[in-house]
Amino acid sequence: MIEAIARYRSIIADLAIGCVLKADDAAWLHAALVLAVQARVPIQRAMCQPRKWQERIRIADAVACLLDASAGSPSAAALLSRIARYRAGEFKTYRDKKTVPLDDRAAIHRFLIAYRGKVPSLRTLQGWLNAAQR
Image 1 (tube, helix red, strand yellow):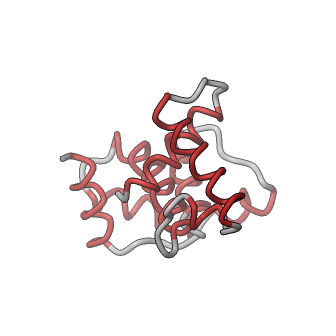
Image 2 (cartoon, helix red, strand yellow):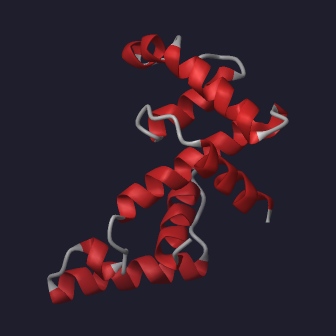
């Protein structure tokens, strides 16, 4: 993952739980804010975020949810089957009500929300799972 995206996700995770930022994350954020103000550039440019950085973060979040869901699945094909069945069934109902199931479908639901309701291909899913195991 690109360093700027990894640093952004680290800062967001720390702030979400009320933690103080790590010294290097705080310095990076401070430098980006100062550069944005002084050079009058967008904050994303000051943070050196790559093209389509928001989409990359959204996909990284979706994959993190997917890894939670894959804990009990024996294979990528079995996980893909669970995702497709849930997507074809109750997903739209929960999404429209803005609720999340309270059982093992919660991780798959969060994945589908982050992945915009799309079901990934088997090859894409296998790539994500293999990358997570490294």
